[in-house]
Amino acid sequence: MHVQPSCETAVVAPPVSLRWPKEGAARVPYKVFSDAGIYALEQQKIFRGPVWHYLCLETEVNKPGDIRTTWIGETPIIVTRDEEGRLHGMVNRCAHKGALVCLKNKDNKKSLTCVYHAWNYNLDGRLRGVAFRNGVRGKGGMPEDFDLSQHRLQPIRTEVMAGIVFGTFSDEAPPLEEYLGDRTTAFLKRNMDHPLKVLGTHSQIIHNNWKLYAENVRDSYHATLLHTFYTTFKVNRLDMDGGIILSDRKWHHISYSKRATLEASAEYMQAQVHSAQYGSELDGPELLKAWDGFDDQITHSIQTIFPTLVIQLTLNSLAVRFFVPRGVDKTELYWVFLGYEGDTPEQEKMRVMQGNLTGAAGLVALEDGCINAFVQRGTHGSDDKASFIEMGGKTAESNESSRATEAAVRGFWHGYKEIMGFEQ
Image 1: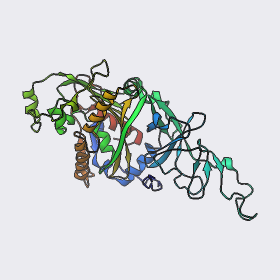
Image 2: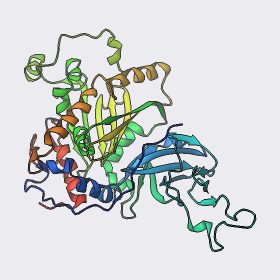
Image 3: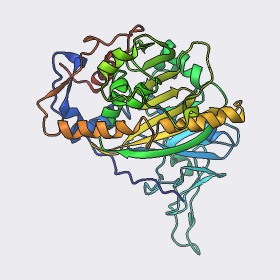
Image 4: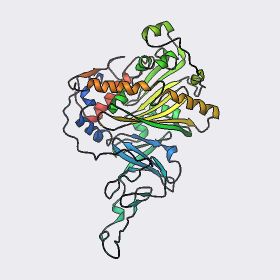
């Protein structure tokens, strides 16, 4: 049995004192990465605010009775599919004493039962029975006015888009498609709106504030410099044709490149990226063989959906990443590697092999777990300082001719500052 990590009871956020630098999203106060009051306020403003959050894949709750546990911020969540095929999202907290009701990552049951006092719930979260409700031998039990219908698992709103189940606590969150915007929705459907098959999953703890990872996946130009495997073997480089697309609200982004369109010479890149080993060869070159899955020639893309969802396509390796705050300086990063139900055995084998590029011990993504911790450590104790984010300009705008920009990073902070209510 997999027991989920403990989750401390949420507390009211202490007063927060922060005035954002006058440069706006081109500056980020280091205080936001280490201040406990800001972290607590995020749980209210973002994770329980008018924001849609990744819960799970629809294929993980495909059959009646399927159960999937997940998180919105620090709050544990249950997603179920009932006997009529309807999806439900609810807080994983018994209405009696507040204990976790579901302890496994995945399960299939006809009802939900808390192990503490055996309160039993329908798959939609309605209370259906209480052990010893009438006492024993006519003594004890619940009072006469006890009403099952007044006690249930706390529901949340859910919507499904392109095989992904999203949830929100807020009645004020707009409909999901409006929240995402047209271009974000279209690209999400490009990659995900197919019958999906889970090929493998894992998670890792990274020792940094969750927002540093949100920055990292929006930073399109560090990949050429930090991930020298990408540069050496021409998987994803800045001299490939590509671009950055921001949603209308700037909160979400798409970064893409096309391996077939290298624009600069190897000598140019070698001058820019000293650590890349351009003469290197793979013992297993089949790792980087790929087939054209789409007509647009895009071979690498990172799509983010504010605040904590990433969809990655590297050659033919399709994966969902979502990250969960585990404290002011700790984040759990989950990876779900995917294929399509229509894949041939050879295609599935290639997807699995290319999954070795990313993940906790991947040939590429290994560096991100380190570099974000370096930033966490380097900014600690410097609450009066701020980062400088002006690569590609000072605004958050799409750029479909260059990825040498931090526009998507500025877009994240534009949304963050807006929803948190921080004034300049």
